[in-house]
Image (cartoon, rainbow, N blue to C red; front, side):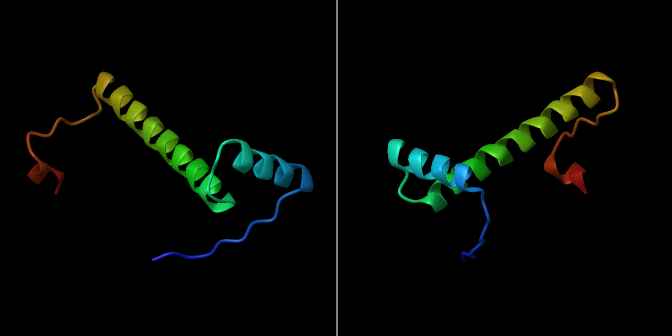
Length: 71
């Protein structure tokens, strides 16, 4: 299922988006923004993984022997 999200941008940003969509062959502005959101989500996941690794190094993490231990 998809949902429409409208955003308001200053004209300078609109021009950057339009230029990037044309130059980098995105199929639409929506595809460009989906790519940006995916990159942001990957960055969030990376930060969470780095925090988990840091906790493990500090001895605050818990190693699981199986997925059953998550409960």
